[in-house]
Length: 130
Figure 1 (cartoon, rainbow, N blue to C red):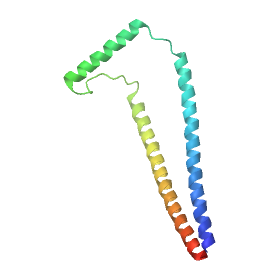
Figure 2 (figure 1 turned 30 degrees about the vertical axis):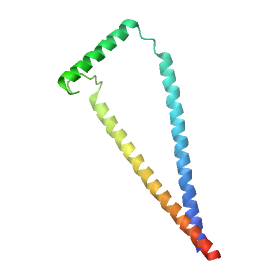
Figure 3 (figure 1 turned 135 degrees about the horizontal axis):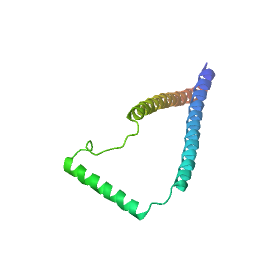
Figure 4 (figure 1 turned 90 degrees about the horizontal axis):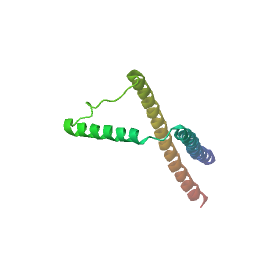
């Protein structure tokens, strides 16, 4: 019976660590892909002309002045290409983030419980052997 408990606890702990390593590998792959696409985009962008840079600086300064005067960001114009798409994409992204957070939380708590159970099992095996 103790051997079965030991095997179950060991497999649970090993499975937890394999899941963590798989998540790290997936994140690393995604980061490399984002880095590559960002480098491609940056290489395609033309350098900013001095007059365009000056216009951008003036526009930013005017927005900051307006923010100080009104005290709210609601009055500053923000370009939205399609507000409904942004809302739907945002809610979908929030749902995915929430789901990933719950999965990570459950697996983390399960891994810790398995780790403590494994420690307790090792302790009982050591006391049983003596």
